[in-house]
Amino acid sequence: MRRLLVLFAVAGLTGCAASGFSSHSAMPQTASSEHMPQSSAASFTAAPTNWNVGTGASIYYYAVQDLDFLPTAITIDAGDTVTYHVGSGAGGDAHTVAYVPPGQPIPPPGDPNNVKPAGGTTVDGTHFVNSGILFGGQTFTLHFPKPGSYTILCLFHEPAMVSTVVVQSSGTPYPHNAQYYLGVGAQDEWSDFFEGRRSISSFPFKWYGTTLAAGIDPGLVTFPPPDSTVLRFLTNGSFSTLSTQGNLTVKVGTVLTWVNETSNEPHTVTLPLAGQKTLPPIPPDPSVNTVPPPGVTTDDGTKIVNSGTIPPGKSFSLKFTKPGSYYYGCLYHDNSGMVATITVVP
Image 1 (cartoon, rainbow, N blue to C red):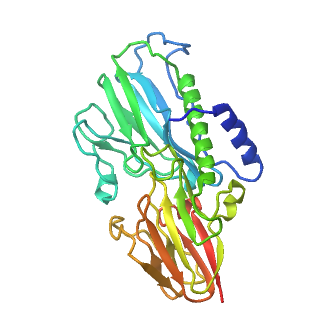
Image 2 (tube, one colour):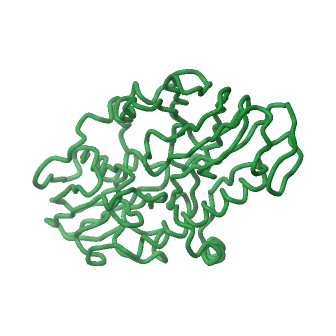
Image 3 (tube, one colour):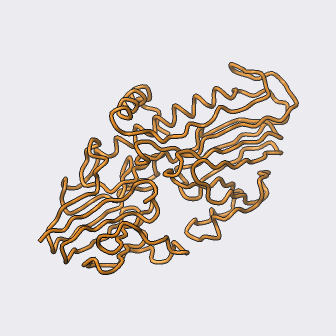
């Protein structure tokens, strides 16, 4: 988690939001606590407490996504609950809230069976628990009855999106109150937003050339994955053109290549019939056709074209053989505005 330049990030992002981009970030709600407010430690009470943790957020019409729990660590007492609030509304990334016992492999999210609800809502260290897919505005509450340290993660976005819940014995004074965690979460969120926005300037190709970025994030495809990502097709490295990124005018016969410049998100390049603006549904099993076809695919507007899932660092190339308007998007993130248009002229 990067915390550099947080104050600058808050000021800069706020100013940019006022200049034409609206914020869709959902700040975590103030955590409820029946303990009296504390500055460093809570007074004793036997009543169980519910805490609230933000789960993802976005800004700039869903273009910059925060892939993080807000805050990333919280200390509670045995018997308490934690409610995870998925931010961002309809255009936010989907997430899961999962606990995987030590020694058990993390289930790959490409298998639909692994992202269904499982294990109930109690985390005691003995079994796998998963909320299933959660969308913006939804919540999921976990109960922690036993002391210990528990790792909570999003199956889609780990290892970037991982948090820790430390559970003390019941009745132990809390080290921090609800307002403290709200403040830490907000600081983390804006730091992540700042880094995500700044990553656009690292666009590694010729501006408005024949190679586009299918998403971008801080550090590009380097690991470990960062806590933010940009869900846009990019033709250049300018944040000021964010609303028109991905649009190009090219001549017949041009070959365009899209490269996934992230380490934390898969993408597709999917085109409906020429002149249409409705993408086909995601296949029932996203693991099917996960590798883009080799060589160059051609498109004359008479068939649906789908790259398949483009993993981090991989690419997809498409040759346009007929004039027309070619709408395209990412099957996973079109709801976030990851769509654009290629205009092909003679």
